[in-house]
Length: 258
Image 1 (cartoon, one colour):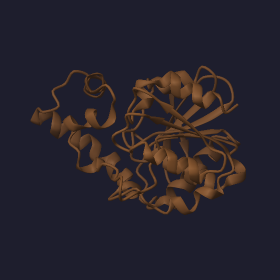
Image 2 (cartoon, helix red, strand yellow):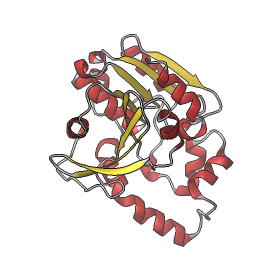
Image 3 (cartoon, one colour):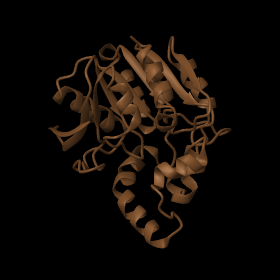
Image 4 (cartoon, helix red, strand yellow):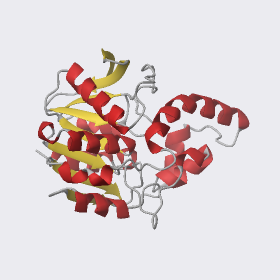
């Protein structure tokens, strides 16, 4: 995937682009995305993939003007417009799924195909979502992956996550991007999305890992119930990072939207 930059009203935004086929926009979660992401590689086999970085991620400029859910939603529409895209397949994972759902609800006539991968955005007191901002790095693999050992290897690249030097580097590096994510996810990711999901008219697929311990699969059924005609694809032996653990299965679910 190539890394490029596009100008919007409030920031220079980096984005990854690659592949050939129908246009597809992928919106990443709070952990960000890289050019060698396995899901992007799978999607690029059948789509022209655009994966913009949220301001504050990578070298994308921070944008203090983006303060709340509506700002995030309109900013991402601005990115799509700046890229010259019309009715791309809209895909979002976790926090990105929350933004994608808001985009489809705010402008229902401009999104005909929508894929939400373990999206944030709803809240159920009986099934609270884990507090990502209070989680230490060595706790992340068990929270995010079905295969904890393999997940730890992916996240740390063999580094010792209990080492104080690693923790310091990790916390400094993540402060910028998690500060941005916190504007819509902290203390809980409830910004009224549940009252707007009924506005979505896109053909929608909801994809969830059966072993998701960050956002429990009970939320998958809440999204399915709220979005008219939505389909649910449950993927076994995958956690919240189903995009890393089962990228081909996720891509197959998205390809079925055509």
